[in-house]
Amino acid sequence: MSFPVCSLLHATKGRPEKAVATMRLWASRATDPSRVEYVIAMERDDYETNDLLEFVLATDEMPWCENTVVGVRGGFGGSAPAWDAAYRVSNGHLLVQVSDDFEPPKDWDTALLNRLPEGWEINPVVLAVGDSHRKDRLLTMLIASRAFCDAEGCFLFKGYKSVWSDGDATYRAYKRGCVIEARDLVFEHKHPFFDKSVPMDATYAAQNEPLRYAEGEKLFTERFPEWRASGIVDWI
Image 1 (cartoon, one colour):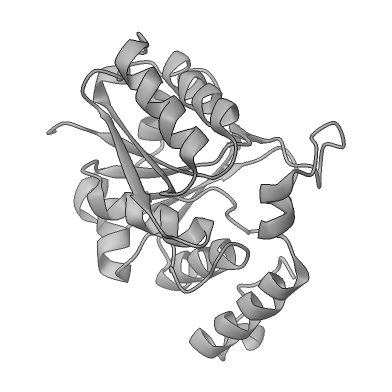
Image 2 (cartoon, one colour; image 1 turned 90 degrees about the vertical axis):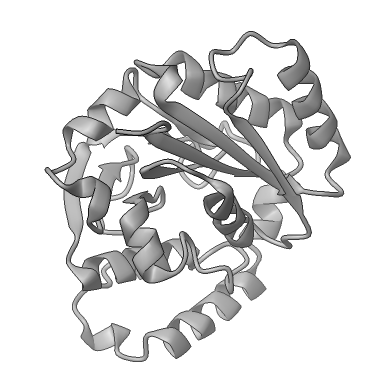
């Protein structure tokens, strides 16, 4: 298989130290960082994150810093468009959504690849992993073959700003019938909704403001008017 096998797609805003710590964590817990490409997408006016990333890439000794970190800068206006922009410059066969508040298990790359069926490189496949909290179908961390995203035309649909983009991807994956259940593989979600020790910072507040939920549900219903009768959605 050609390099890279995995592309980690990381959207971040306003959390420079946390973003770099997340990048280091994924590097340290990979079995083989040489098969991993890291794509980090940030707002072009997020100067602190941009500056810190440039410094880290110039001075750090993470296994992939020298030739596999790609920085994507734009006026995204939300996390979903940033993740989708990261997908569009990535090269890996397996696309993994990375957030500032998800922690991968040790040897996460081997664990994911071991759950993929034969022929996954050319077929639409989505892996449903656990987050240590949710019991429904919602995929708050999308892990998909490039073939799935290419067939769907996106990684996350960029019409959303933040919330409901995960529901959109989940719905499309289950509707296509290409989900492999691997919930015993846990990528822990350190979100203030679940862990009160995590502060509700400005980025969380913007992502979860009521208007974004209302706009997200409206767009989801426009895209999938049949969703209530589908039997797929169990997270609302």
